[in-house]
Image 1 (cartoon, chains in turn red, cyan):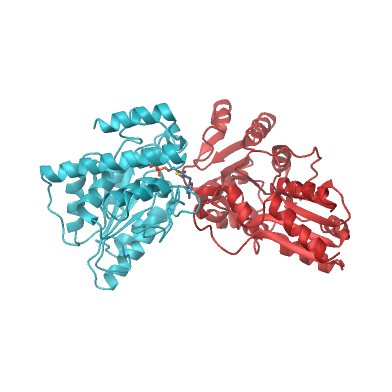
Image 2: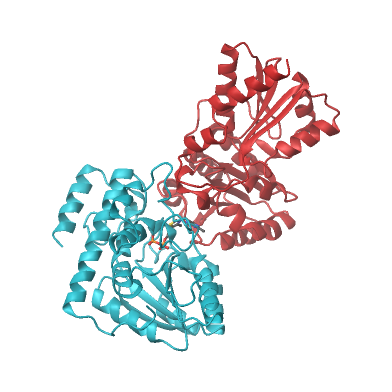
Length: 306
Length: 282
Ligand SMILES: Cc1ncc(C[n+]2csc(CCOP(=O)(O)OP(=O)(O)O)c2C)c(N)n1
């Protein structure tokens, strides 16, 4: 996905001379072509995420269109107050981009996981929060962010961009990947790939699932969520702490909308830090977020509420 | 353990340091090559500092940070964990065979260190810019509790880009933490570029001195110099000490030295074989 970021960055800078890229010592073997092509619009702020955000906000104050790039584990949490006050409170057009969403840094451990970033970023007024499912979505989000007069946060996984069914990106709008009458999966960001895997497996077992990709976490599309939930069984999949993710928000939206549900389940990261070494796949498996584990849990829930 | 070591070291001690450095680098090479994980450049860079620190000052007894009389080591630049594990194993904190658990599913020898994961691993790290603050608190705790233990924190020079490092630097002086020693692995390479191209930290000893520290520069690959500097730091009575250890990232194998690429890269077979040869000849 980082390649999609680079391409979008190059196009954005070519189209608008106010666009510049700031990064905090991240992006080795990714951003060099940008630095070569736009040397005077490339700034490495050093290993200093707080300053990265403040400087970007200052540039936006000065009429520029800064993009601030770092890692998902460090940008939202280390730079939180700078994002809150400098960027969001002042409602400045800064595009914040991070790599390594959720648990996608896998074996690098808890310091490199970002399983709380969804809560941190969604709590901030004025900020649009995007979690792309694939490289194409990332490019679209990026173009959206550069045109917006308000701040944007985009968090991409460290993993390769998956091959997803072709789909259109409309900011704010959940992507309908498939429809089925037995239940609805809302999959956040790169969890779409695992949700689709689960749905395919369930299809072979005679269970027909709708799968919606949620790439825009803020604002959430309450109307579309309520409509999509008309199967009566709702499952939310996200690689965030359960209390940090959108599962609770979706439940609230459905309750407020008066939805009649037979089942609601939130599949997310349990309330714990990574313990021993585990790869990303192993963690997904352990936390029940892999396609196979999801299919099993959903099958049990559908059977239990037949 | 808290009594200062002799200011200078004899030939036998030097020989021991050299053998420890070599063992640490060889073990790091094995771990990164076999497990395709970890950061070899930073680990080779600090191998000599760790050899002298553990071989001459901490011994096998830096185990209980809550003991006010015990010395404690903190690896603030957590991505150098493989070197830390190798140093601990080679002075006897745990059997060397356990190094084969590095980055293995289910083990606690992670790419970044986790508190309590292994004997001697006193604190978790991996996010840069935390260790010096932890060190301040720990050094203060030892003093409040009437102990003579020292706290030694190893930082990267790039890590010192983080403002939090300098917040801690001010605290340490304000509270006169003479039992705190910061070693900066001054290899002048970070993870995207060279220090000079990034923020250019300039004369880091002068920077720490301006903050009120006792700060000296030294050759971070010269065991004798490292020993002398640590002995002086151990004897310091008033101020915290910063040792700016001039090093070469990847030091020990010509392939890895001074290249940002080897911040990230894991050796393939040809690199591995050449590195072994070069290290064994040292
Ligand atoms: C807060 C934070 N930001 C970014 C990183 C990513 N990162 C890991 S190592 C590194 C470079 C470290 O450079 P330096 O401190 O000079 O150590 P060296 O590897 O040269 O020994 C960076 C930016 C991190 N681990 N923590």
